[in-house]
Image (cartoon, rainbow, N blue to C red):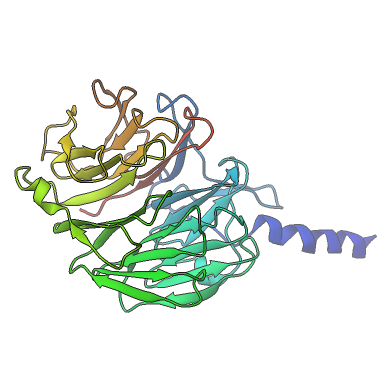
Length: 349
C-alpha cells in the first residue's frame, strides 16, 4: 500500500509543479500576474493560482507579464510570458496555472509566445535572445534559434504554420519556412522591431520599427515599401508601441503610438487618427487588442486606465485598472468577446 501511495505521489507531483514556482515576495507586491474579465472589462479578477499537491496554494501574483497568447485550437489554453520568471501556461482559462519543468523556459524574460494553429503541442517561446520550441505540449523545449540581441516579436502564419517570423531589438527580421529548422534574414530595419504582423489571406507582412518607420511587404519579405510618409503631419506617430491587424477585416490595422491610435482600412496606404479620451502625446499606450469578430470593438490601456469602444472609436468608456501596474498585455477570447485577459507589469521609474 505504501509503495502504491508513493507511486501516485511521484506521478501527480510533476503535474502540479509543487515547489517549482514561488514568485511572491513582499518587496515586489501581489497585484501582478494576469487578470480576467468576463464582462468586457467592467470587472476584473486576478488569476494567478498555482495548485500544489500539499494543498498550500502558490501564485505568480508578483510576476510582471509582458505577453499573452491563446491556443487557436483550444480557447482555454493560454500562455503568459513574464519579465523575470519565464513562461507559464493554463489549460482552464486562467483558473489554475503551471510552468514547464524544462529549465530553458522557467526563468528569464519572455517577450512573445506563439502556438502552432494546426498543432497545439507545438509551442514557441522567445526568451531573451533565444527561441525555444516544444513539440510535446510543454514537456520539453529545445533551442531552435539564437541571436546576438533580444527577440522582441514572434508570429506564425495561420494558414501555413511552417512559416515563422521574428524581430529583434537591433532591427533584424528573420524568417523560417520549415518550422524553425532553418532561418533566413530578410532585412535590417535599423531600429527596435516593435511588431511583425502577418495578413492571413496572402503573403503581406507589416513591420513596425520603434521611433523610425512602418514597412509593408506583399511577397513574404522579399521586397519592402516604407509607409512612413503617411505619418509626417502627426507628431510622435512613429514612436510606436503596438501594431495589431483586425482578424475580422484583412485591410484594417490599428497602431498605438505617442500620438494615440491610428487606423488604416486600406492595408496601410492611408491612416486616420481615432479620437480618444486621452489627449495625443500625453499618455503612453502599453497594450492594444481588437475583437476577432468585429474591428469596431477595440481595447487599449495606459499606465493606469483601461479604455473600450464598441463602435470603432466614436465613443469610449474608461475604467481604472485593477492593479497599480500598467496593463502591458491584452487578449480578447477568440470565441467570447466578453472574456478579456490582462497581463500587468510594474514600470521602471
